[in-house]
Amino acid sequence: MKNYKKLIESLNGKILAPQSTAIIEKAKEKLNFSEEIKDFFMQTNGMYHEQLRVLPLFDKSNPKLTWDSIERANDITTTKFNVDENLLKDFAVFAELEGLTCAMVSKEDGKIWYEDSEGFHRTKLSLEDFIANASKCL
Figure 1 (cartoon, helix red, strand yellow):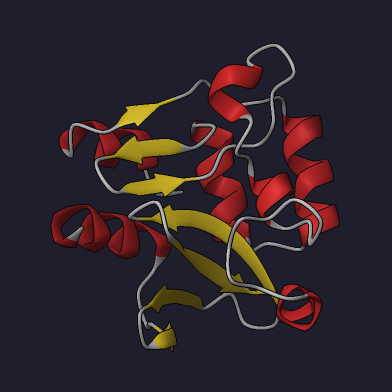
Figure 2 (cartoon, one colour; figure 1 turned 45 degrees about the vertical axis):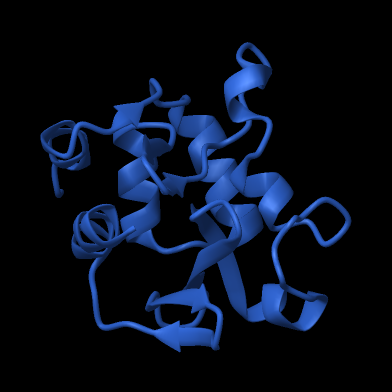
């Protein structure tokens, strides 16, 4: 398993304590995100670094910091991102980029996609590399 906590600390990012395994498993089942995303959540409940935010799982004991959660981002009635129901069938939004756009993971193959002013683009990056690169570019 990759050491996401160490990576985020090396980038001077901020993290939240991880949720319970049961909550993480329930979210993975509901949102169908990749094992890589699950491994991330086993170590930390989201991260913040300047303009990159890996969205947390909602924590009712900490609603102020987890309100803009991965659950809200993937609910068509509460998402603030430029996604529709068809897109959310195939992808799980997991990150906020520059406060305006998002990054998603394909439910089919686990590949990461990101949004910019020209639309959505597929990457070949692992989650670890995506976090490292996005933290430097944004």
